[in-house]
Length: 235
Image 1: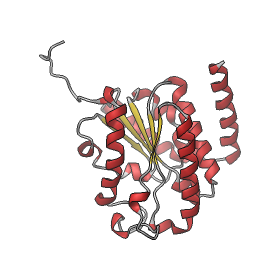
Image 2: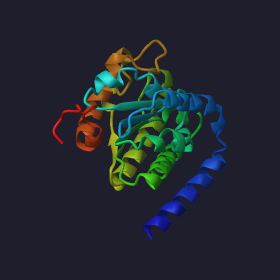
Image 3: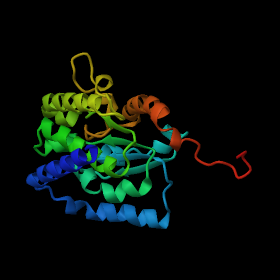
Image 4: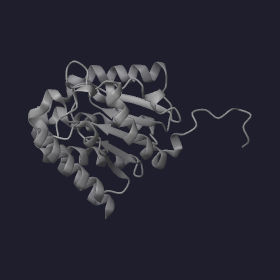
């Protein structure tokens, strides 16, 4: 019965994704580049996979931010949540990740998606991944408020609430809320967290994300800990 429910969910979400008529093919060069990198230098199995849009792609300090974990960065800039789902068989499944951290959503809203569509696209991502790795822990970093997209703040708040509500229903799914630390007393994004474009973050901004992600990993990514066991270690 559970398997039937999963199949029906995937079919429903697939039809919804098709209705949006997203052009996933435009990301093919990025995905092929990941695959070429994987072939040349196979990534570690059972690592923590960070996937999503440019805020993941530009997170160049993952290894130093999370030194106790093997990490893989599969962010591709400008992508939506459903792009990660479309390519999950190629940039999630092969790695058998011990945990997955997702960030996407503000591009979706900028491109005209509703908060409800963002929630549904996250549901679709979880369903796709769980179809072949049922117990993998998944964390969604809340959509960040940014200077460049002040007009989206109401939709960002709504989408975050919907994803939070969904995460509370799903076992092994977490919502990591970075938004409160990124705004001032008036609810406006703090300028000192962003680079010149007002959209992407500087190290101070990423430090706030690390503060949310690290405790979650400590509780959910034990299989990714200890990067290399010495050959002479006790068995």
